[in-house]
Image 1 (cartoon, helix red, strand yellow):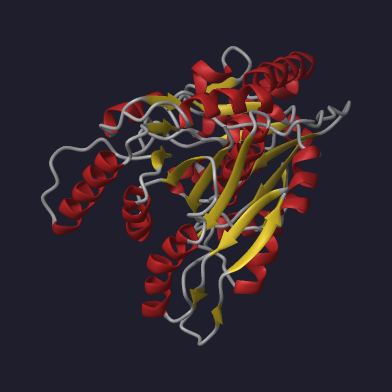
Image 2: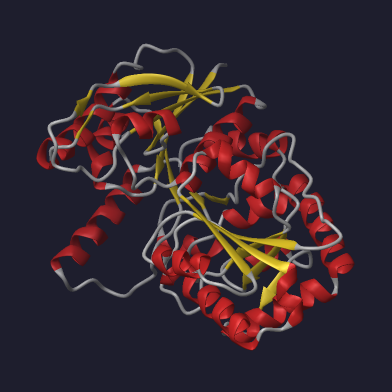
Length: 393
């Protein structure tokens, strides 16, 4: 029987993002959704993404109707969006449900996958239940806190219970600890899918590029890298001239990186800011070391999985990561872990990579082979299809 998957999310391709004037999206989330859909095609599933297509409204009168695009071969239906705040919220509530309603005559076995528990998804969730579609939660993160006491906390707890109750097909989990944060069963840990033909990072005889990408903020470890660069420039070790730091993305730490890029000394820092996917792939292909520095003491350190580590390893970079969540079970012993989360500890790890270039490159090659096997599209697609279209709980 034909199987169809509808993914309810906020994925955004670059063309739609530019046209709608959106700057608050998550490129990592978009990439993960699109690769999930592409992998499912190997198992004969026909995916369709229904995206909110929204960002933070800027208060202008600009409004965009629902639209359809094919992104990396995946059909995407974008909900209507307005930059007027109240209208923006209304459209994000009702437009995705209207788009799902229009698919009701499509034949085959149908599953709806909800990317995290978002209030904007509630009308679509109720409609999917009314249409008796199988419903699965894709849980990407979440704090495992005690009883909520504030009004916002009680609303969040009620939202969680509602999604868990109505998602009769279980939950995809970004990491194993999230099983404690949902009553939906069954569950499956899904760490992402890689491109079918991953690049092979080149390791030159001199000079190493170290990449930090994504959200540049305290809870992603950006201040730790800033402090390590300042320490190196103050101490001036000769080996630091072998390094250059490449920074992509945006966030509260971006101005500090820009100041470092304008300054003198080693290592050199290049700040690219927010880039489109094509430019990001070029930067990724030119790097040898990828950083994932989310601190272990952070509120979501054990209940989210930094999917970027799979992307970095799959591109042939040596992953230097903090020991959080499921990173060690997924990558060890093919990654380098930061046990001392201090500027001195990060400097020591970077020094080791420069001194042991051959060993570091071999570790990166082994890591790439490991994740390519584990997150290969056909293999991921078969596992996902079996879970998403199993018998309802």
